[in-house]
Image 1 (cartoon, rainbow, N blue to C red):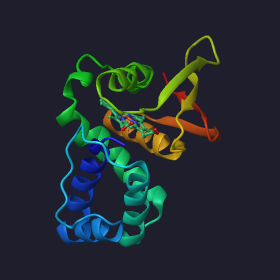
Image 2 (cartoon, rainbow, N blue to C red; image 1 turned 180 degrees about the horizontal axis):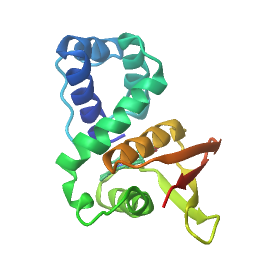
Image 3 (cartoon, helix red, strand yellow; image 1 turned 135 degrees about the horizontal axis):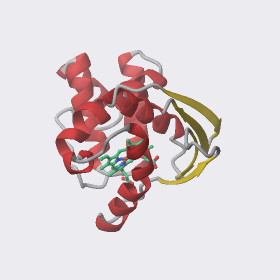
Image 4 (tube, rainbow, N blue to C red; image 1 turned 120 degrees about the horizontal axis):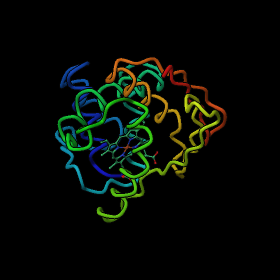
Length: 176
Ligand code: HEM
């Protein structure tokens, strides 16, 4: 997985739990305590997942809570700083969510070894308030997807109802 995910996790944990806590997360998952991550570097898949899971253990919080914190931090702080161009002209969470397949498609095209998730969209009503999203990825991180949708809702100050239908499908209900 690309280092950008690890870099964001590092910034979040340092900010919320302190530098020492982050060093412990790194050590506990087999990384050097001083390890820095670059946006486009490739990190072994197994080590990436391990870092996330071990961090939750070290911080003594449920994985779901770490995903939620990551979702808010990514959408409200990290991505607006590192990927600000994608926020330009984005008027609401609905527009951003629909754009995510294109964003990740471009990531896959431009960065060697990236295997970003892809998304298929299907409106279930004519008012386009209820959206079925098919999450396509071998990583089985749909719960992280859900936390990131929550992060977007917070960024745009919206309420989005999220229903997980299966490990590869969610239904999102917007109030507009
Ligand atoms: C400007 C905003 C964004 C950019 C540039 C971006 C880019 C990326 C990149 C580079 C990865 C790592 C892919 C890899 O190494 O194979 C990734 C992973 C991921 N992204 Fe995004 N992303 C953005 C926003 C979002 C949002 C808002 C969501 C969900 C609502 C999302 C869902 C995910 C998920 C779930 C993964 C984990 C990997 C997986 O499931 O396979 N991303 N993204």
